[in-house]
Length: 72
Image 1 (cartoon, rainbow, N blue to C red):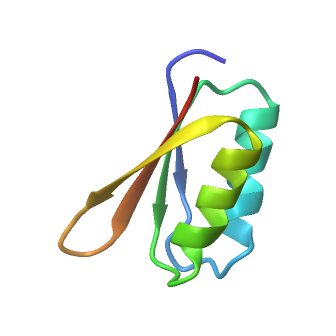
Image 2 (image 1 turned 180 degrees about the vertical axis):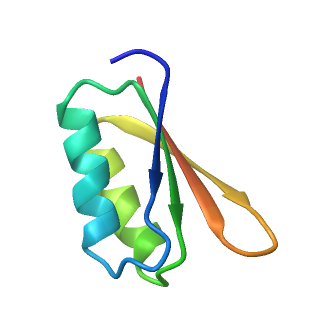
Image 3 (image 1 turned 120 degrees about the vertical axis):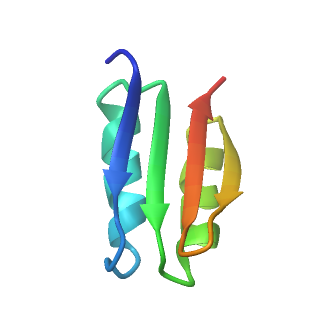
């Protein structure tokens, strides 16, 4: 997969954002942006990133968070 994969997980309760991130990484994505508003998302997405040896960054917006996961 080339480019950035964008996942809109707003309104999804965990573990769904993490499952969608894990699927994208497993399918070969090198960079993934996840839009998520579930309070558990930071911990869940961090765990997936760590398990995949990827870096996790968080961009705060006025309405929701954008989690940027990049494979090392």
